[in-house]
Length: 153
Image (spheres, rainbow, N blue to C red):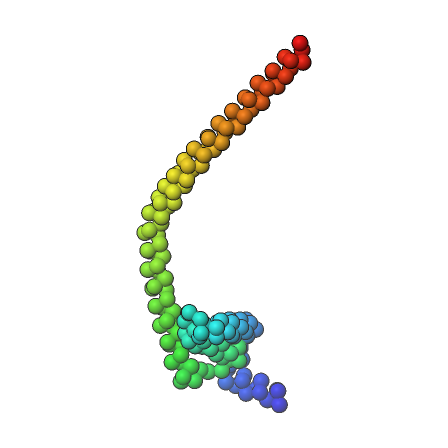
């Protein structure tokens, strides 16, 4: 029976290669992981429904790739919707990256300013502490000197 299945697949030209099977397995695993991540997002803040549907679509695509079967009409629609969502995600990601790059110099300047301000305050506090340490060392030295003089007499 297994030989008959292989023969039928060969007639249709749908026998996936080992690389396609590995890629399909990876897609299925990733789809399951994304869908599993979507479950808690259904009650917690986050795009739970989108993650569940996206994970199911990815797992379905991986299963088709692994087995070499054709997509059904519903799966084809799901693939087209997934491709559109990927385009939107790329476009929005590019916008976000552009905004980050545009604001990076401002953020860096503000960070440097805060560091300088904080560094000046630390230097001032450190200077006071060093001054107190110097005073204490001088007092200790003078006491030591007086004690030596007293011992010498």
